[in-house]
Every structure is written in C-alpha cells, then in structure tokens.
Image 1: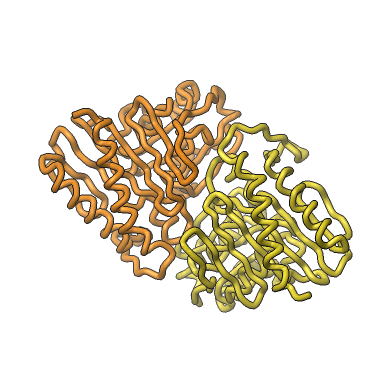
Image 2 (image 1 turned 135 degrees about the vertical axis):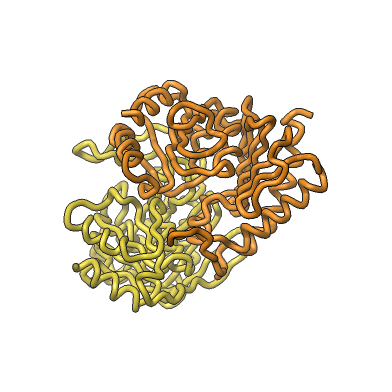
Length: 260
Length: 260
C-alpha cells in the first residue's frame, strides 16, 4: 500500500477530528498546565477529544500501525507505518481565537515522513502532500501547492512562532537570519509551513519541536518543491531545531547563517 | 440619522471591498514600497481597488460625508460624518497568505468613532459595533461579542503586531507589560482587537497607528464592553500609541505599567 492510498483515510481523520475540535473553538474552556517549571502550555479538551477519535479510527482500520500522539503517548512506534498526530498545533493561537492553528496528521514509513495533512477546520482548509506533490483544498476549490523561487536571503519572508522561542546561542543564530531577510512574521505555527508550500512565505525557522509538530508538514513542504531539515542539515523527522524553505538555494544560505 | 442606521450600508461596503480584494489574496502580485527610508511597507493592487470601490459608493450615497483613507488621502474631513477606511489592515499578513488581515470601515461623528466593522473576506467573518453593542457574523451564524473579565495583568493574554513595532522607551514600556502577563501573541493586526471583543484575548498594545488603523475598531471593542485609549488615557481616534482592553480594571493596570 503506497502512501498516496492513505489520502482518503486521512481525509476521514481530518473530518472527524475537526468535528471534535470545532465546538471548543472560541468558547470559554478550562486549560490545564501540563508542563513542569511554570511554562504556559495549554491543553484543551478539544486536543484530547480529537486525538481520541483519531486513535480509535486508526486502531480500527490499521491495527498493526503505530501511533505517536501529543496527548496520549506512543504505541507500536517500531511498526512500518506510524501515524504522528498533533490534534491542535498552535494551542496558544487556538485559545486566543485566531485560526492559525491546525490539526497535523502525519504518516511515516520506516521512520521517514511519507504523507501529511494540515487541517484548519475553522477556515475549512486542507493542505496535504506526499513528498512528490502537494495540494490545497478550501471552500473556494482546490489547487496544487507550489513553493516560490527565492534565491536570496534579502528577498525572503521569514516566519517563526515567536521570537521568545529561542534562547542563548539559538537566539543569536535566529537573529542573524532575521537581520538578513526582507520581512519577518511571528505567530503562525503550522500555518506558516503551509504558506511556504503555497509560495507565500520563504522560510520557517523553529526550535524545540516534537516529532508531531513537524512530521505531517515535511511531505507538504517537500511535495510543493521545498525542503525541510534540522538546523544542521539532517532529518527533521525527530523534531528539535528545524528549518523549512521553499527554495533549496535559500535553504543553504539559511543553514550557513544559522551556523554563524 | 443615527450610527446604527449605517449598518446595512457598511455591510454593502464590506461586500464590495471584499469582492475587490479576494482575487488578489494568495496570488503573485507586485507590491510597491511607498514609504521613505527603506522600511518595508507593501501596497497591493487589492488595497487600491478596494478603497476605490468604497470611496465611489460613499460619494454616491452620502456626498456630504468626509472620507479618510489609507491609500487616497482625505476629503471633507471636517464634515459631521467622516468615513475612515483601511482596505487591508495587516498588509504583511496579507502578502504572507495568512488570514489575520482585515478591511476596516469606520465612521466618526463630530470626530468621535460611532460605528465600525472589521471584515475578513477570506474567513467570511464580520465584526461590527457601535460603542453600545457589538456582534460577529460568520459562516456558522451570528452572535453578540462580549469581552471577558480579566482583572489582573498576570492572568492576561496580550497581543501586538510585532515586538519590532517598538523602539527605545516605548519598547521598554511594552516589555514591562509583556513581562507581567500570562501569554503574549504577535502577528494578528486588526484581528487581535476583534479577539479582545470576542473575549479570547485581554489587551492589545500598539504604537505608530494612523487613524484608519484604529477608528473602526473602537466601537467594536467598546460595544463589546471593553475600552480603547491612547497610552496616556486620551482619545485613541487620532491613532499613535494605543491600548485596547477587554476589562476596564485591567486597562488601568496596563496604562500604569506603560507609564513606568
């Protein structure tokens, strides 16, 4: 079974998780603080409801597949196919009412991201890709996703979740790139990667990612013609410090600038 | 004629300007740099097309009214009623493909903001208010907008367009607030004020605003129960350094913290 054959199943995961999440968007909800050390990391009822419904459907349909999820941990993570789920990537945007969060549904085969979708149920947009091609489906229709050419840092639009994401040497490295680009935007989480895939932005730089923050996005960006690696050029599939670029020529310059 | 009577006319302005703008969203467009000194300030064809269509409709319907617009300057600005227009507030979000920009349509009567709408044509959301009440209309229905209670800075969610908006003493003042709040979000332009009105965020702090960046938003936030002033507590209608809070108790604390 090829990765492409999973597309309609992923659509179903997106529909069901979206239905689980939307009733909680822009309503007064309790959010627990699950992180230690006082960092604000909201967990919503929506997160848990959506991951539960996705895990159930995967277990019913593909009982041999593994699952890595933000809320409920890992199962059979050594399987050939592993689903990597983040029901609400961008929980801070979610609790702030801003529709730049998304549901990330990724699939790895033997550890390599092979299919991914970012679903934004409020705007009713689905960005998906398999590393070879990528497409957007929204209320007004559908179209292929293609990154744009951008060969020079000084012409690039850069995005990152927050300037407060970075500390110490990472902050200095990020600011070396930030000081070189044309425009920097903060606050968009997974939406930014999809805008790189759509040819609207040129590079996303982040740090401290978990696998479920990035696995679904790799086949979208790469399917649209871009490239995603760790800051040192390795595989991004395990998360950590990640760069996604629409133009491979730009990517080389960003990695060099991050290195110093 | 009371401000409320203008509501259906503003709906028509929103529909026509949205139709003028949407064909340019997420397409490759040329953007001119209209500012001096090398600051990146994109102007799009969409901006000009939308302001043209709104000015024409206002001139036809209310030939005695004044108009203040971002793109084409001021006319009859001493009239009793003056329309204050920003076809695309958040041009950087717009060119980045992210739907947190909006069309701002404000109306002042004898210099005081009396009606306003923020229209997001991509998400098909309209936030409007007249200082006494405010409402949201979207694809899923409509509902009143109400700010939420938030009496303490340490419980507040703060938003601002960019941490790079502030310099010198203003930056220090902003950071005094930022360091006191629970969560800070960047990148949302006019959408952030509407999320204060919707009870999703608590305070927006910005600087360097023009009248057309803020006039439309004042009757929305205040109609939802919030308060908008300059950093020193005066009228926000002329722009500059502005604070919008959902809870008047919080507003007092923010102003005090900004003062130092």
